[in-house]
Image (cartoon, rainbow over all chains, first blue to last red; front, side, top):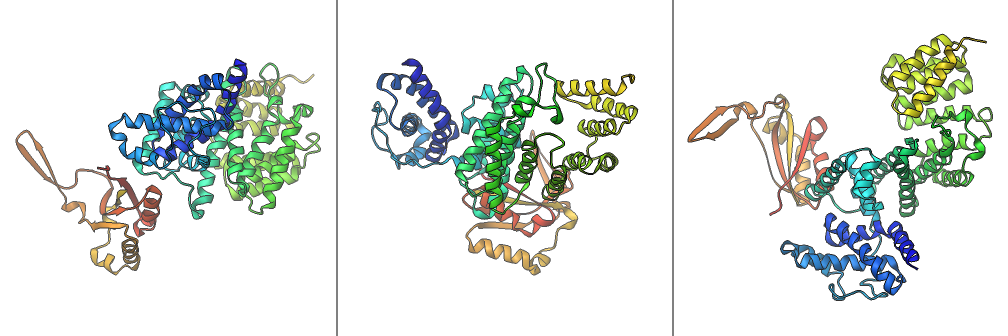
Length: 420
Length: 112
């Protein structure tokens, strides 16, 4: 029985937290108060649901409880008068009385999560603050959990949240969905935050990084939410598709010893077919809307890999074309580097090497370990082991994660081993 | 909310009041913001070479010529605007001709 209630509260936390916070901010205009009262409402729920059973509509019950808690607190607070007037508009019932199991103040609080997402990801908030605030207010991750996931101290993360909220309060940021004219740019800002959260989790590989891996799951949940709230936005669909297609390969990217497994050696039978199907389906839906964008193109590239039987079966010319497309939509030397790999597979290694050498001359990727690593891989495959070794060593000087370091060391050993 | 827009640029690039009066872009911005009841007040400042800096230390009033801030970008003009939120203030600032060649800083007033 107790476990059942705990499970119900946990499920409500996952499903309702963001919505309750979003509504409370809408009603009070006070981000801290909204967060604290939502937290209180969940604490009350644990006891009350155990005694009275789970309410018919947990979300409305939690919102009403949080709203009444806010009213109560503002009454005791001298400066709360103005906010109290805001709240009064939606008031019904005595805020200090205990809430009956089927009692709610309003049948329709509305869904204000879109306002919340756009405000959290407002371009005038520092990027780190956007990421932290989105996770804290929309998913309910605690400050400590977010701090652990981003490998910073709890006080650093708390500071980031405080600054972001102060910015919203003092700089005059509106709590609205942006007008149509600003929507593409502002949506891109939201998607940028979600993709960073996903990648933070996806890049984490070792067992100790478990908390970080949770970030990918949270990012997928948030992307689903954004798709649900803006169903006609192809880039939202594209990003969710991209995340699912990447995530489908997650378990095969690293072997049991924590060694990075390159794409051509991954066990494709272990890829998550359901996620691939869903990703491909979402991508199709997005492409039918006829407004391509960088996330849709990246998802298309990922889909080429995910649906190929093996590396030789992969449509590398199609991938090279998609990278060229991506380079026009979102020009970046990293995209050029990826294109070089696809070109090497489609048109032969010399064509790929030419592009990589151009990037080295250009210098924009100096310090990025994947440039010498890619160069080395191409030279190794061109049977030029001595030159490959030079570039593997250069990549090793720059590499960040342990799994990648071990992969490069393995390759270096291969090209420097005396031939049998 | 009330914001001040600070027009920041290199001293040397500021147009004269006559040039601004004759510039259709500046004029249309002011007219538009007045008709939208956003523009509260505004003005153009003489160059920083004509600035005077005052500070009182103990009982002594110290006066010096020149600006307090030694940077390339100085405040050449300002506009006080009244609008609902930062997004509107950004839209208003972005439509000001100075935003295209220099920088407009948006600062909210303390609400009292």
